[in-house]
Each structure stands twice: as C-alpha cells, then as structure tokens.
Length: 222
Image 1 (cartoon, rainbow, N blue to C red):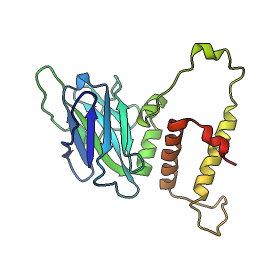
Image 2: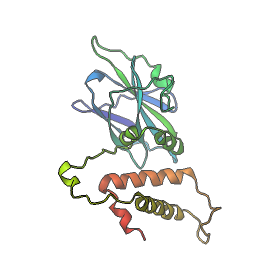
Image 3: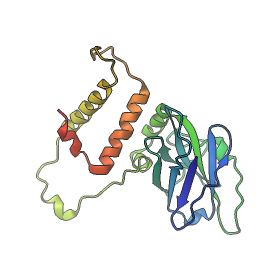
C-alpha cells in the first residue's frame, strides 16, 4: 500500500505490517538522511474518512511527527528536523505510537537504523494533531516551504496588507465550501451542522491551492 524513498537511494517497498492500523519502514544509515518521500502505491486506497499520520523515530533520541497522507494527498516529501521530542512526554502532546518505539531494528556498526512509521487514523483526528503542532512543524507537516522576502524588495512595501481582509476571505471560502454540503432546499443558519470530515477535506484542498499558487484564488470569491 505504501512506498518510501530517501534521496539518493533505491525505492523501498519493504513495508512491515505491525498490526491492523500500524506499519513501518526501517531506514538504515539514518544519520545521512535529510529528506524522505512517502506515498501510496495506488493499489489500495484509504477507507473513506481515513488517512495516515507519518512518524519518524530515532532510537535513543526520540521522535517527530512528519505529517500525513490521504486519498487526496497520496504523496509527500518531508524534511527531517534536527530536534526530537521525548516519546514519553512530547511538547506537542502528540506521542509516537508504541508500535514504532518498541520496534528493534538491526543496525550496522557505526550506523543508526531509524523507523518511519505510518498510523491509520480518522481524518478528523489527524487534523487535530497537526493543528496542535508549533507553526514551523505544521509547515513541514503540510509540506509548506516558508519563503523569505528579498531585502531589496522590502523598500517597495509601503504598507503591510490588512490581515483582517485575508481572514475574511478565508472564512468566506470555508463558508462557500461547507454550504455545498447542505441539502438542497435547506437554509444555512446558526443551527446548521457539518461533519469534521468536511472541514478536514476543505483544509487539505485549501492548503494544496495555497502551496500550488498562493492566495490569489481568494480574489475570485464573490
């Protein structure tokens, strides 16, 4: 179902099934790894409403949550951070499943074999986990690469954009998306409800558009 590839190495499909909701790859010589690509092979999709969180566990150091995969986001490239969280009490409150931390990979002398783990979870739970991460980790988890403004262009900025205008456009985009799931003939009001799955799908779609072409599409919202 899954494959992974470390830059400069052969594709790995040697997935080890731990249980019904957890699987892992062993990453040898992890000290040489900076980026890793994880993807669905296209043979078996996720069940409706489900995706997978991606974890990286370094024996003796700790762990980090890299991000997620879903049917709408079947592949991702993650940058490994140099800092690791304690597996017993991570600052984010997100613990790495014991299915990964209890694994005992074999390592060659002088090298470390790390664990790349995938945990099958509901999309609502995944969205909640990623939302609780610090901003820098969230950008990495959602594959958003922060860009810096060249110093030479700073002088041309007369006034920063009003953040309330952008916030209003994002809220209107979310409202229009959710309204499409309200049954025909039903008025959208304070008592209207939608599932968290709809919010999660909107979030994935929204981030994908921002990553692909910025926020210009928000200008087309009436």
